Length: 125
Image (cartoon, rainbow, N blue to C red; front, side, top):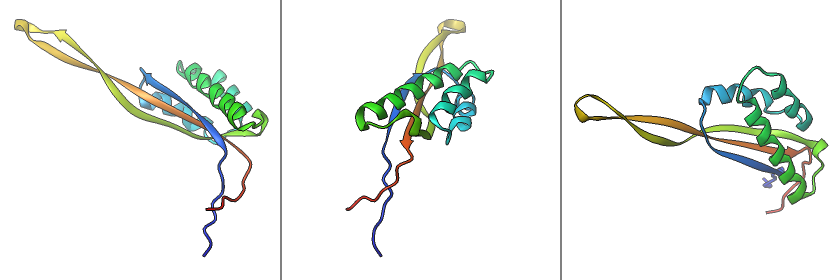
């Protein structure tokens, strides 16, 4: 059996240390996953969530990376992957009774968007 793989030519953009709930960001990323580049830019503008601006700002550099690094047209791109992962916690302390300190963990997230072209070829390997 011959090992045939479809090539995925694309680029990604990474947003680190985003202070938002994973559920709130996943609402948006689930909606734009699989959409074309133009549609993925328009969809967050009409959604009533505050973090839509952040996601739309991650779509732009992913398309710019694909255009610069691989020479792909933005009109041929689609969002193939949009992930939300846990990242480091911001650790703070709150003063409590009798001189004690109470830890507060402020979670951060890492958001990855990947844009691919509709090109499908074979890789020899």
